[in-house]
Length: 90
Image 1: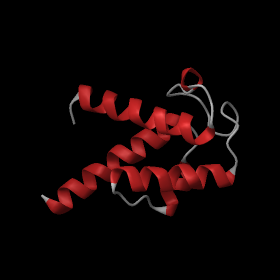
Image 2: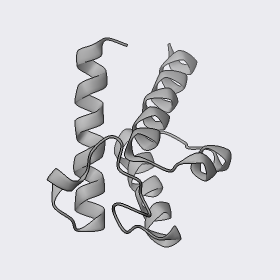
Image 3: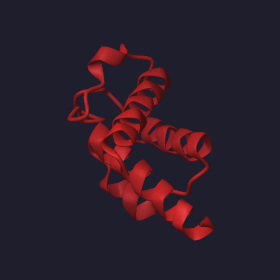
């Protein structure tokens, strides 16, 4: 994946997180922790995962969800799931 595509997807993920958590997008940095920095709880993380799956038409494995700690973790997971989906269909 090209750097520009990665950056665009990361920006989209940050926008979705800000919208779902009802926070200012400027607070959503790639290194921000979901629970500590952004105030997410387990239910809001599930909501974020469902939003990502719906938005990008992907499936995120439960094991991946358990490892999500930062915004960057979610972005990486979305990118990996999209790459797997593209490989499976391509």
